[in-house]
Amino acid sequence: MDLADVLKLATLSPLAPEKGERSEAYLPRLRDSIAALGLAPPFPIFLGGEHSITWALLAGLRTRFEDITVVHLDAHADLREEYDGSEHNHACALRRVLDLGVKRLISMGIRSTEREEFELARQDPRIETTYAHQLQDPGVFAALCDELRALDGPVYLTIDIDGLDCTLCPATGTPQPGGFSWYQTLDLVRATVRESGAEVIGADIVEVVPMAGSQVNEMVAAKLAYKILGYRFAPR
Image 1 (cartoon, rainbow, N blue to C red):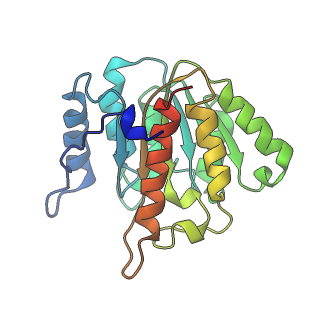
Image 2 (spheres, helix red, strand yellow):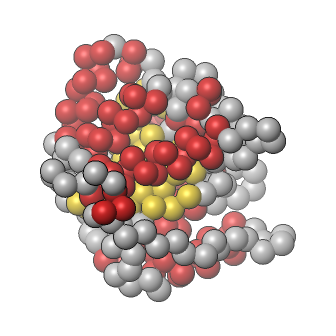
Image 3 (tube, rainbow, N blue to C red):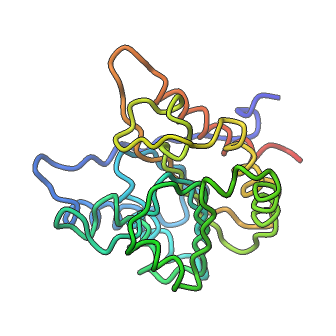
């Protein structure tokens, strides 16, 4: 079956930052553009560079949903209060998401974190983190997949491409060794999007960077987006 037989795709025009525009100005503009979409599109997938866009995307979507669970695949915790003079740096992306009042944050594959982030993850009862070294135990990985299958209510999926093994994202800006394989990634995404009882309201794939002479980064991100759509809409 061709997914095009059951799904209509629409592509919105890119909303790029203006020259010299800081995140503090750009992100509210992005948030307002998402909120203005109303009920369309019914299932948005956002493709980005900076992970900081996730706050704006969720802020725009949450006007229609309550008690959102965020499923977060990444190499980094992204829980800093500020970084490089900005509260909307990519290193603060999930801290700002927590500020929106989400119900849960399930972070997986984390393998780079600062003390501030580690302590916040221990203290905030909404945050559930499974670190990359823990997932080398097949039993821990299986238990995480079961947890994702047990999700219900509205769920938003955010995937930083550097959560994957470096061979799958060789040009991403902040690579870390030890990421998920392609099939591990699909196991986690499938458990969240297809095998759970959750209402998956949207997804993003971020930190995707082109590299001269290679299309690995773009191809992996595009294929992952297509898989998300397949898990979400293919007949059961």
